[in-house]
Length: 132
Image 1 (cartoon, one colour):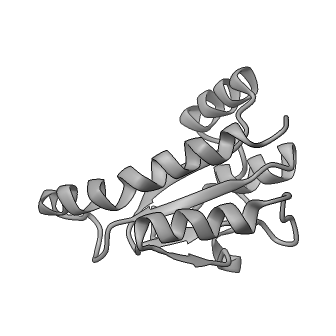
Image 2 (cartoon, rainbow, N blue to C red; image 1 turned 90 degrees about the horizontal axis):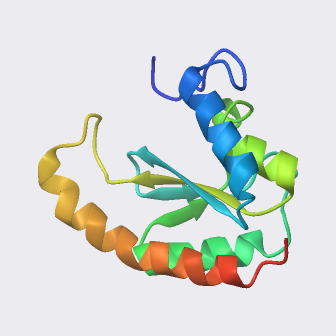
Image 3 (cartoon, rainbow, N blue to C red; image 1 turned 90 degrees about the vertical axis):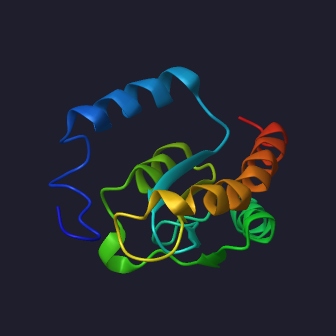
């Protein structure tokens, strides 16, 4: 699909239904949805801002060097992060890893890994402190 295309509707794709089922089974404290590209972290959905989500987002941004931004309106409504935030009222983040045009070259892997290693550790630590 075109850039920023989020699907026809929530759960319209098989992979979306699989992630939905897994999420309900695991009941996570927070989620990270990885996409490429932009070096950006999107942290909220419309006016939903789960407790602590901005602070955790700031921590993830500091750990990765990515910028924490509001979700663009055109990219809302059918994303995993959006559903998770609205359904669970817990923090959810879309991580736009890497920089450049898609598809990103494999030569960026080392940089993306370095950017996200501390982000993942920070997310795990934050999740441990969230009441479910």
